[in-house]
Image (cartoon, rainbow over all chains, first blue to last red):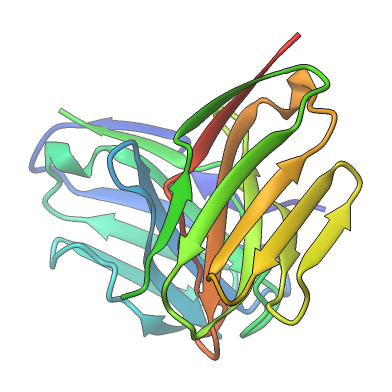
Length: 114
Length: 113
């Protein structure tokens, strides 16, 4: 079975550009989570969805970040405009149902903003 | 405050030795405590997890010890192997918040042959 799929795996962009990260959760999973990982701050939860509805976006750093989940099989995390401090690895994870704590992580997108 | 503190930041152990990683929390609303293992270039993967109604859980060489009164829990890796070299994260999940996880800062474990 395919796990969580993220694209692109690597992204290099210049400051001020728009960046869109994509995630396909495991089929049948109803919860989706976006994390950011940096050396300084570790793994931070940015936002999570249950049944395609955003539940908690308190971890989104600022208005430059937005996330959508138009259907059960696709989510995006957008940064506009991007800044060098956004450079990090962004992970998407999914779990089978609301309140099921086991999260399955994707391979991540490594973002570098120059 | 929802925070999980993890130590040590890095750990070097000889093959066959015991690796011990510790975590502490303050929020008594946490009711699920997993450990995740992450290899370079990969996403974290669930290793083992415990709920606060038990004090210990063992799966193979991996054991979680949980001390509810002290609000601490630890991961013990027995007979550590070079293949265990990875970054380990403890985490905690608040009750009734949809499976949200709060992660510790991570411990980079290196097992020397």
